[in-house]
Image: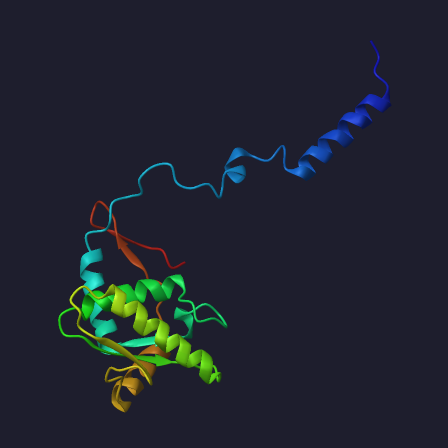
Length: 179
């Protein structure tokens, strides 16, 4: 049986068309955006240690900014909700003041955002202690000139590529991952 060129061309065009529509893509890329079907890995044992450091930084900083609100809106973003929830827990016992620093110039929007943040914190508070939100710069002591200069000096030092990234292996030896 002899096949002509026409069925071969038709099959070739059909295969190219299917590739273009994604019908012949590997299964991994087809299900890339599906939610996880099993539990993720266990939380690292250091997570609690670093959570405490993060909390201490938040207590020192006491800030909200434009990123904690949806753009051009009074609505809190997901990051804003998480931050205010954490502040409500951190300041549950004694209350406190948070500072909202903004780069936008719309006074009505700024006042509305302050009101939304105050309202959210009042609802999230479990003890009834007041957490106020005012317009201002973040808290914390920041860095003095000596610390800033020392940090810049460290950043300017060249990094030795042979010893930059060392990981201990099973036998106690190290290997360079820096290249």
